[in-house]
Image (cartoon, rainbow over all chains, first blue to last red; front, side, top):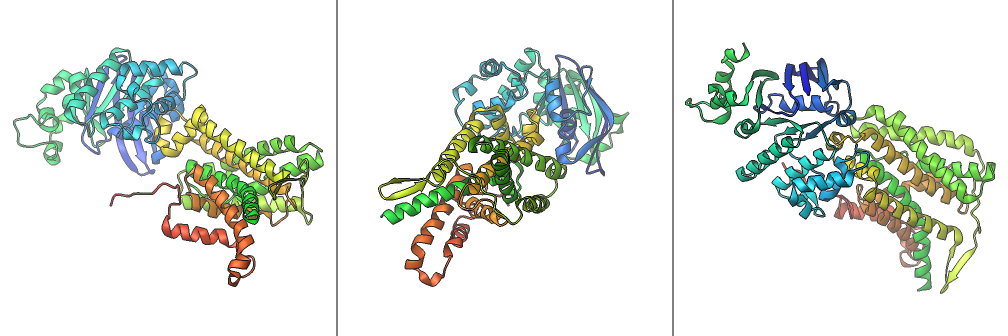
Length: 259
Length: 298
């Protein structure tokens, strides 16, 4: 479905942020992408969805294919039309718009069938139907996350990129969001889930990638990642060691990750 | 009382012109974050388009107005595409300076067309007066108020219900998120400029069909829309309309009452009055009456 091969991204012509990232997201799967702040996760998503331009970034090497379509040279609107949707970090709902207006904006690239698509989203998120005339800025964090996901689903993407959907949400709501992601996936949408909350991400993903300093440093089935000693130490906070991923020097010394 | 009413009616008519121009400024500012100083030139060009269609081609007033609006919109979109689009992402200050350059270029071209003779457009019914209760208004002014009202309603419906209108509002709120929804942000910028060009053309046409027509100094009228947007709030559509009308009425009321009430302010204070009001508003509400108050966490 999504194939990223050896992608390099440079900001402002000089700052190399992604150093040859490769990953595969099979059709129908949920794949998790883990990493600490500054690892390059969001940059990778921008590269996938064509949003690098607006941040003065550019793909300088590598290829990205969505199915058989090369998308690394396409602009954001064309990538959306090609079937890739994205929920940006921090939800980014249009705060002054009503819930329904937000959903209508999500259907910008659709030709017809918008009302039915909105009804489908309401089916998935009944709370949004109740709040359809409410201003989006006044929704709770969890409701805004649902709205952001619903808005991305209106365009009927084959693949949806979720950037930190659990960010700033209460644990109970995180569980709810996790169930919704599983539900969206069960309806046929492939998911690339970028998270710092590794427990949540690995609990629903089939496969996981770990990024550090602009590189993929580990890549295993989710079940194996959950059992991995380093992942337990640095991402799940369940290891025997007293260190955490904040102890970054210790972390970087584990060269075997890069082998 | 009749004097007051007459001043208000006159001011309302003039204010409608300022409101149309102010709306153009706000459209561009909301979509791109830039104050366009090219509005005066777009207004003059719009008036000249109408003149050309009606006087040179012999078209009746209303089709000439429609064609001028289309040409004004096209001119706005061309300006955006050629002068502004390549500079997307550059500091807003740079873009504002570019619009001054565009204004100068367009006005030089317009002045060559105008020459030494004013270019008037004839309004059907000319200066016939409609009188009621001692207050009179010309048919031309009534036409202007009606056209402004229809334009405002059409714009409100466009922004509320159309796909492009919603996309424009979304772009104004958050460009990156708009892009992520598949909205072509560049097209939205061009659309904002096109709408501003069309609005300026309506204003220009009604100025041309007023008492003197389009002269080389007519562009100065568009500067009155600047206090209008500062009063109403740079990013507020209703603010632009109310600000425009307020400037028109303040001007008219000052012209009528100031010579008697405050003669020490000198002659022609009416020309300064909108700026004086803008100064007061800036002191009390720097973001305008309806503008968005910027709050920054420090």
